[in-house]
Length: 220
Image (cartoon, rainbow, N blue to C red):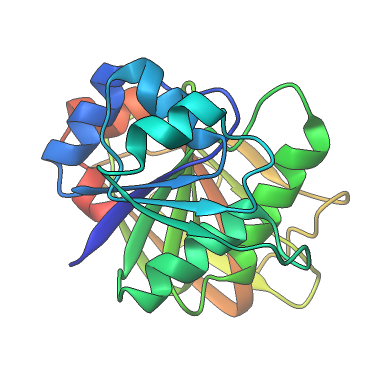
């Protein structure tokens, strides 16, 4: 599976987290505009930098000018993160983890969560922020889990239904429309959780440390 990391202009993780992800198979780093500022501070070398360049520092742009493939896209009908995602799709990456997608602006956080839903049919994108790892799922899903692991599930609309097996509070053809109902802090009771998601997509939030320590990243 061809996988990449996309570093946005929000709060970046520690370098050790990015190093772990690279070793886990996410070998290519793509920076969305100001994400390159964070990359330079962390001592990372992005393969690609893309955006409208309203956030990247001039000295950073100059530093990477001979080291990375730099693409300036002036259009304003998509965000810099979307530009990076479209680049990943063009380069035929099938999976990506979005880093630095959240920060001190809640609108940016909402936007980026919406983006991973928006592009789900073209590339599997997850968001890693601090302690949380959020992914989009649809159809039949099998999660390798640790007993007593916390798993939260959020839907988008009422037409999407989920049935679960292996959770403490199992769901039976349940809809979890945003703003009406959710399955927050549910608990895995064994080594597997099975989900059947029909008529749409749902968001699943798990703990990064649990995924890392138990070798679940390739199957998360």
